[in-house]
Image 1 (spheres, rainbow, N blue to C red):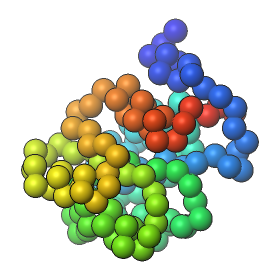
Image 2 (cartoon, rainbow, N blue to C red; image 1 turned 90 degrees about the horizontal axis):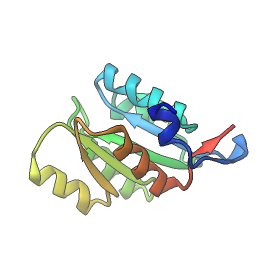
Image 3 (spheres, helix red, strand yellow; image 1 turned 180 degrees about the vertical axis):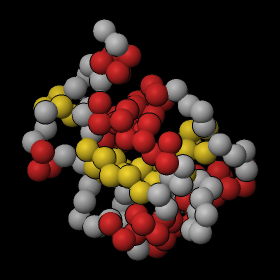
Length: 141
C-alpha cells in the first residue's frame, strides 16, 4: 500500500453534486501543484488559486468546503482574505499554511477563526487529517 492509499483509506462514497471543495490559495505554483495532487489522490475536489484576488474572482459563496490558505502572499495576505471572508459572513473553514514564523500574524489568523496553522514544510498526513477533521471522511468516486 503506497503512502497516498494509506492516507486515504478511510474513504466513504459521497455524491459528486454535494462534494465539498478544498480551495488551495498559495502564490507558489509548486506548492499549489503538490497540494492539488495530494488532495485529489485522496478524493477531494480541489480548486487552486495563485492569489487572494484570484480566489475572490472564482469563489461562489454557495460552495461548501474549506480553504487551505498561505499566510504570506503578495497583494492581499492570507489573513486579510480570511478577515474579509469573515466580515462578509462567509463560513468557510480556513487552514493556514506558512513558512514564516511571524507569531503576531499567526495569532491574528487564529483570532480570525483559523481551524489550524500548519508550518511549511508539513507532512502530507498533517494536511490530510486536518482537512478530514474539517470536512469529514475522505470522499471517493
